[in-house]
Amino acid sequence: MKFLSYLLGPILFLVFSISTSAQQAEIINAFVRPHTSLNGSWKYIVDPYENGFYNYRLDAFEDQEDPGKNAFFTNSKPTDPSELIEYDFDLSDSLQVPGDWNSQKEKLFYYEGSLWYKKSFDYKPKDPSNRIFVHFGASNYKSDIYLNGEKLGQHVGGFTPFSFEITQSLKTRDNFLILKVDNKRIKEGVPTLNTDWWNYGGLTRDVKLIETPDTFVYDYFLYLNPIDPNQILGFVKLKGSQKSERDVQLNIPDLAVSLRLKTDKEGHAEIDFSANQIRYWSPEDPYLYGLEISSGEDQITDQIGFRTIRTRGTEILLNDKAVFLKGISIHEEKPLQGGRGNSLDDARQLLSWAREMGCNFVRLAHYPHNEHMVRLADEMGFLVWEENPVYWTISWDNPNTYANAAQQLTELITRDKNRASVIIWSMANETPSSDSRNDFLTNLSVLAREKDPSRLISAALEQGRVNNNPLIRTIDDPFASVVDILSFNQYIGWYEGLPDKLAKISWRIEHDKPVLISEFGAGAKYGLHGDKLTRWTEEYQEFLYEETLKMLEAIPQLQGMSPWILVDFRSPGGFFREYRIDGIEKA
Image (tube, rainbow, N blue to C red; front, side):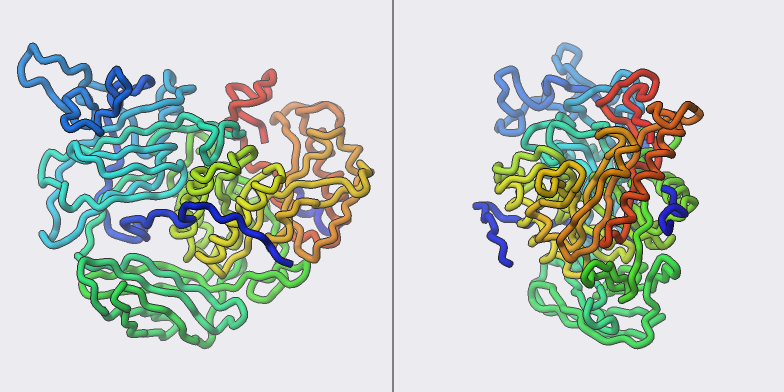
């Protein structure tokens, strides 16, 4: 069989009374800018009762005219030996940033709650007229951020970047940056209370200072017109204190492109030009063009690939050629050391293993992974599925929950919209169908298409039975009418029956769209052997894969798959004998 070598109408929208667009970040494209790292050792204080944030009446210190010295964000010291201050960051233990607290400190392994971070630093701007920003790659989950005792703001969401301008608050010496990071799971959160991955808390990605001129290149987006692969569309946006038209220079030397653009008074300039003999990015030839954008004293350089991705009937077309997605699902964990993955080495190890398996596609589950993953996928030639953490039982009727889901999706698209490797934005995973859920996901899809018209929309959809026949399966999810690719997770032979049941199952999918099996598989313990119907053995896992591939091959629309999962990962559920020791789920 061709897969055995792989082995492994109208829509009504619910309108909320709040804006669906996230608050704009202060600095975008932080990855490609010169910076000063604040990574390394940070002092921390565990605060499960949030005594450093509230007084004993549960009044927030930051809401008081005089918060007092026992507010942790003031970083206060006694002025005389008799003064009562009940904390001292400088006498506290340290954590490494980036990194989760669970895997660094055994006593924090199961901790969910508030933890305060503090970093002291000096900084002298290169030019007194420049602007300074502090940028966080991610912090899980709710973060309150203070500099020198003043609140910069709050960010909610554990996997997307955020930043603040600190130009006016910064001192040349003795700055202290303090964060209260709270990873408690909440019902109205995104994700919600129940997930099947470890709730790693803390500053899990890079923290850096970025200096720019007063007016700087704020954002840019370049992509091929899906219906004209010689036309490059997009925009450049400047940000500055002066509201005036400005010149922008855009160069792509290897395409012999040199464009002089002029922004409007809001700093926005449209990009629309034709280029001949474009070398299209693909897994076989992941070619990246050098890009230079400059305006005034500011310049950005980046590496960008150009490709088209669209569907035609049941086919997925990359650069107008049919492509089969030979993939694997991946969690963002350090593959050998454990804990939340964050480094280029972590990304390289995971993607190298996927390459050894013959993959051309990876599904980054179930939340936005770090930027190293998608930039390295650009270089290595992987097609990528990225996912918003709308997972299982989200509070569909809560406007604030939707607003946060929209914010996180916007932050993800803003960060990765120039990555040629990313071809699919996934709206959700395994969410039960209801009217409010369908409206929720449809609105997210509208938002995604507004932000990025160049990629495909999908989600791990719900399944059903044809005429209530348990042996004939279908996709009966109303959201299937919205997505570009029909994806679903199926575990026949693992969570449903035994592998021999797979031979009895057929699929009848009526939609004229490509089908991608986003998950399937069975757990096994390396080196454990037995007969093919003994769970957790390598033989059982092998038998299930063989039977699953036979079943899936019979789906006419099948255009790809990403089995579960590349390597073991830590999960709070399913502590079953030696096969899920300390919550590690076996791949």
